[in-house]
Amino acid sequence: MEFPWHYYMMAGMYIVAGLMHWIFPKAYIAIMPPNFPSKKAMVWWSGFFEVLAGLALLAVSFGWFNSQLPNLKAIALWGIVLMLVAFLPVHLYMVREPQRFANIPKVALWLRLPLQGFLIYWALFYL
Image (tube, rainbow, N blue to C red):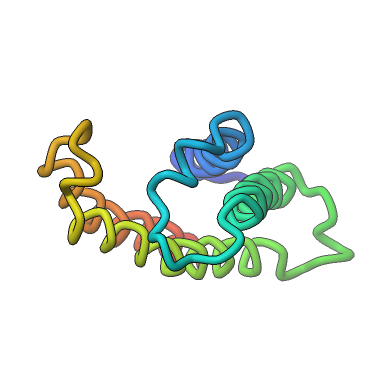
């Protein structure tokens, strides 16, 4: 199966983003709202699912597991959408509490919200 270059870019982006959760967990823990439980576990598992989704997209593009898991692409893409929706409370928290993130420009905090919308659209584009 042949996919456009941006499909592979998306897959790679999620793999790299997931790995960053494991390499720099403190950065991700620091942006989570104070009332979130088990922050370290949430960061670890979100990284795991990002890597898994990216690898699943690559597996589909290379034809691996297609006969065993014919819906793997749809599962991975819907997983990405759900994950991005699940991340929205973190982005909203950062916008509502900008004083806690003084090292990040306010415009960057606000731009993350439409970026999430674009990333959701991007995943849905391939369904």
